[in-house]
Length: 160
Length: 167
Image 1 (cartoon, rainbow over the protein chains, first blue to last red):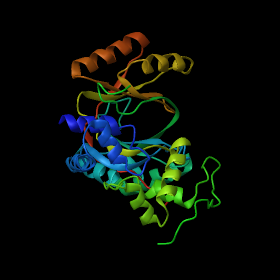
Image 2: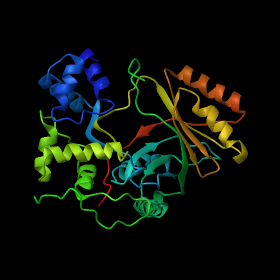
Image 3: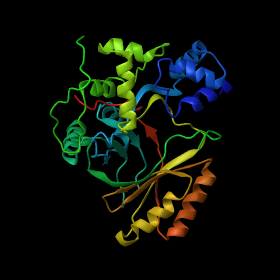
């Protein structure tokens, strides 16, 4: 990774300044100019290093306290199709294929479902069940009762 | 596009949901991605929403101060510098606090959740390589005396691009 890109990541990972010319402020911090910073951020967005730029909501504070981790057993040969269909739902923030550990754990598809409360999460989980149809060989929803630790991205060598 | 009043609190349902103005909601809902890469992005947003740059900045500052947003800025793809796994443990209730403290104390753990299930402790372990990851998991099992279920990511189906808070 280019030195400048790394410096831009370090300067922006805690957020852009809430001032009229945020990229000019970042440019000052990294010893570059406004146009270059914008161009590098555009390039990092195109290459996928930056997924998106925008407001990052704190769902818990906003009242989204459901936070259900839905886990699904689907046929191994259907995991691709099922994962893509579930991942495309706008209320699913993450969808993953993970290994089974039978007999204690037979679920191979994980989908994080967010809602204001458990009822809303369960309604969304029912939509997933309907979508999967016969591929749903069993599912559960694991609600989080406590967040014990949560830290964001830290670049090695960046500010703690 | 109609102008938006700064303080227009609609009646909200749900006791835990904060009361937010229309402008606050639109900033939260419509700007999780696509923040302008232009010299004056907040002025551009203000124009799109039919309000002023000063008010957009004021409201974003307020949303940040109150913790409704953690920041306005880029969300980076998790770096593929090391290896990570999702791990789960089945912890007896009376030991949960103690075990959770041990797990959270590892710098390799960045997420640790208590969940209501037989597997009641869920955490993500990130290490520089597979050998280091195995070492950390083994150390955890030794210190807690409990087995860890290791659920590494095999495939991701969806890149998180934010999601609608209000439909």
